[in-house]
Length: 212
Figure 1 (spheres, one colour):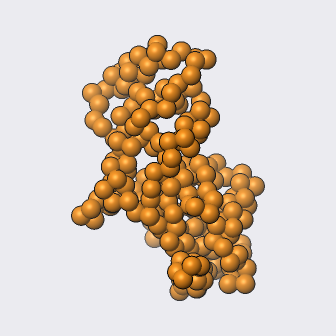
Figure 2 (figure 1 turned 180 degrees about the vertical axis):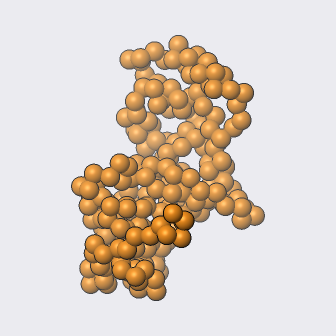
């Protein structure tokens, strides 16, 4: 079978301007809860796109760890490629794809670090091994071997054995994407998908339909 033959028609639901909430965060909350109930493997997985100052893009999948009226939060190593790109060019795009529901959500906006106290609060909820990993890994940097990484992990386990507190690394924490625009996409038959966009302006949100 060729790639050209890989296709699926979408016919589960529709989306109209009357269906959506006037507030895109409340609309996202509604759809996210439906994605959770659909028992998707990682309903909070999202593609995160960043770019350098000269426009070189990069994208990867990260996990959403919180959202509210202020925006969408994820956590990472500040020294990683995405961290360095966000420090130099603090704008990003997110994309959620929920295949079982034939839906995607796109978010674009300015990015800022969350307060250290907020990062520390989340860090304490992580499994012990994941907290050790944040100390042992200099994300995105070159390493000599897997064995070198495991030696570093063992060194930090010796410093912070199971059952002891692992402090928040100074190089690790959260970012918040404050949406300036959001789009809700519902798959429809014949690729005539429903696309409802929210654009911030004038102290509120403008809702408009986009051509598929």
